[in-house]
Length: 108
Image 1 (cartoon, rainbow, N blue to C red):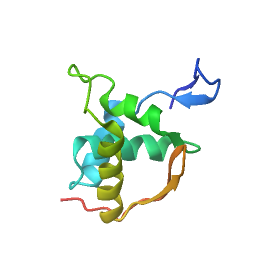
Image 2 (tube, helix red, strand yellow):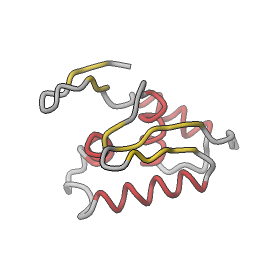
Image 3 (tube, rainbow, N blue to C red):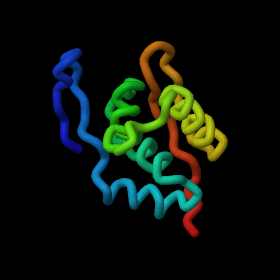
Image 4 (tube, rainbow, N blue to C red):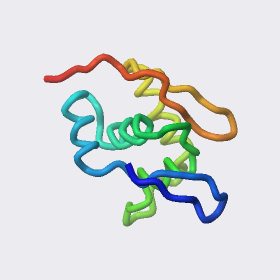
């Protein structure tokens, strides 16, 4: 996990989860989509909560099409799907999200 300081707000942040962490999430939780695995890896690696805009950038920042028209709605759907899969994710209104507990593994 690599720490960095956000140039806009000065808060300590982290770089995106490396590909091996995302693959590990996909192995442990075979039902996760790629974006869900990216989000779970980022939330699990975070020593604190993650801001919504930080999450948008990590999931859709490299999208050549610029990502979805409404990333807020897409993120809400991802969080909802992860909760249905057993991940306990706390919403921090006006800020972002924090992972409280992982779902039971569903290795294939």
